[in-house]
Length: 281
Image (cartoon, rainbow, N blue to C red; front, side, top):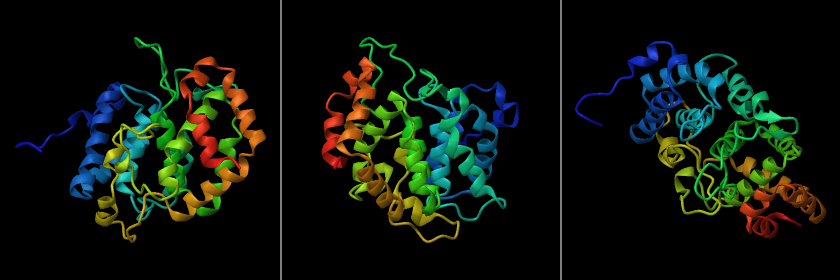
């Protein structure tokens, strides 16, 4: 945006020597640049190079997880779905890697999350809160990534696998995310750019405000512009699965699981009651 174009020559060196924040910056520029000015070949090439190189570091964080920036950049480049693959098999590769980052072994300690390595990282603040009342950026970015890019036939099985995880922290985040995502799921909110930091719960992630309908119109990948961020069949599948899954008894079991971690129950406060009103049959 200045008189002289900013370059990132450090990316031509050893990426392993760069701090997480130094890697997030070019990903941020790719996403915001594509959102503001449309696709550019240089951004596309560099994004794909960074994606392959940085997947092993996706759970590193400065102010946010590197995974969030990788997902936002991907969505900016592929707003209408994965068309014009850079190589045959790319779609499957990206679903099996970027789409499964949350399942990396380092993220889990048995059946529960590895505290501090995924989702909320710390309660090291004056109020000693984890902020479990909002969705962690790595979680919400990953959920939307799978909803947006999974084949239609895979959405329901994937969602059931998400529900099968018995971690109280994971279940708490699912409840929070489903409450926050309700507008997106019922089609009153169509793009992440419509999320507000004042939303409760807040489900935005790093630079998700760049993901707006103009991306779909300017995409040069050859696909027709999508009318909304999440495909119609995917969002309808989520609503159907959630409402069939959560009987009163099952929801009570989830609340009992969450209540075993005192700070989870305290920080969620009234969010489970909202979830029950929206989804529980």
